[in-house]
Length: 372
Image (cartoon, rainbow, N blue to C red; front, side, top):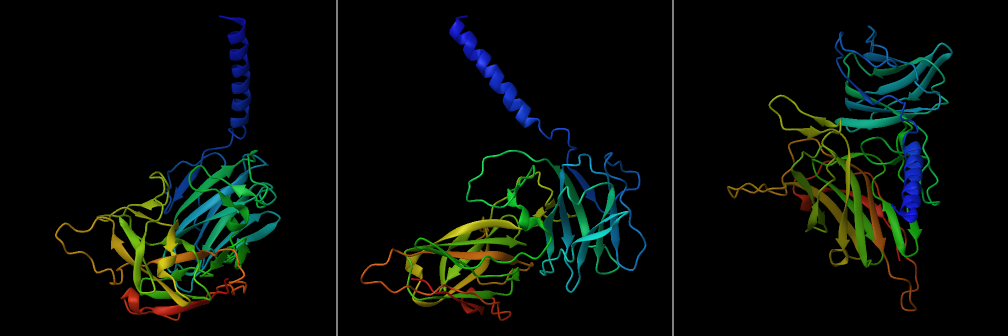
């Protein structure tokens, strides 16, 4: 072997050792553990987790005794639950020094099956304690709890990103503030060059009975983009997007990895996913207009029936369906001498109530938007 190749391979070996050292940081942390409820009395738990307990109290409760395996590790807790109208799910961390409420109410107000994640940082996990989940009535609303220890790692992040980023083994990278257990607030409308971004919803909204979201535009943009998260849409179905009573196209949310804990299989029931799935939709300018623009959704099968009996796209679905983080982006050309007046920014309001199952005759939710 020539001296050149010998030096090259030596350099590669050193590089691999450096990379391996980086990859092994935090490797001593335990693997994620899933608690399915009810928890079997003879089921083993990892050394850092005591046996889950369900004390007899007025409100249903499950306690998880936890001994942090590393004082610098954070704990990502993902809870899969059935929301109850008017109910609550309180999460707290108890130690000999006291009790800290991490979330007054983990529910999002949909009344549906749901999942949310909570990040518990090392400054809270200062020693052994009990992670408690208390429901708003005598029956437990939680089906599954996933516990995943996270290590601090170096990474490459845009300087424009100010929040701490959290990356679980499965799923998307999220910002730490979105995992604080509090209700998520919609970002305010904002301009970036000639593009305006406007939130249409400020909280999760049920839409299976037909809801119309309306947007007031001073001028028609060059193009648009609609982004949202949906919950309740069965696998094998997609949303049909209607804009101004015209079928604008279809919206197919992302399909999570098949080993994701959000998949549930019931007896004699198709596999379903519990949780929010996101996606986006391109809005052509040809279907937008000056004035009020109506946005609605209906449900359709990915594969239409072979017998020719295609489901009426205007029919209300026979299952709960919700959307959140519904955001509209509009691209306006730079102002010219003939178009010097700036338009106002779009704004949204809450749905006024159930509407006709026909997406062309739904109840309205208005959104005032001042755009160029």
